[in-house]
Length: 300
Image (cartoon, rainbow, N blue to C red; front, top):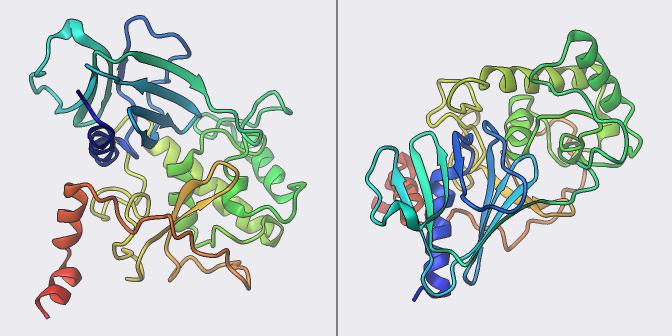
């Protein structure tokens, strides 16, 4: 019988394998609710008792409750499953990994309500992955003339009335690429800044449409510059990447305080004590322990 700590361990393993990667396949016989879109990035994996949720960057949430006989398994692509196929309730495949939930009591999906993302609260912005030059110019204009002048830049990037296609992974990577403080007010951005942000986001989205997600330049190991790398060294300046929960839904935002200083507010938001420096999953611990500067500090 799975206890809460078993689901917690499953959640930690799934976070390591799924977050920041695009959905390649989704199977869920008898599912009630919307189906996640192929190609969308996994944004969060959360566990609470025997409940586990996977959240995509377009707001789709997969909720599972394992109860007595259910369990989550994680397999390499092509690896043989340890339970029969007819016990499978949902399978989530990303490049390199397949997460399978067997015998769950509850499998459902729903769309996380976020007023900033809701398309019904105003005209939806163009999708950057397919936008024309005129539509990109409209996105730049919407950002430059944003109504809530005090809104942090990081939150504006998730507003689907400004741009569509940027989720939590992309906003962290775009802000790092532009060396912008996530906490600066959108009113501090010049027209040139807005143009740089929209162009950077467009390049990332279009580059990764048909291949494994690589948010950062290819010379950066692992493909992501800051997302999921809290507690590790920034590839650009060497400072330590941090994570903070921001906004109404407290999504984890990853950034480098050493080089993301453009339009930085005079007083930054307080550090969230609940934001861990690194996922306690053994794979994450081994990754951190193997970093050169960590080895030097341990040996010293």
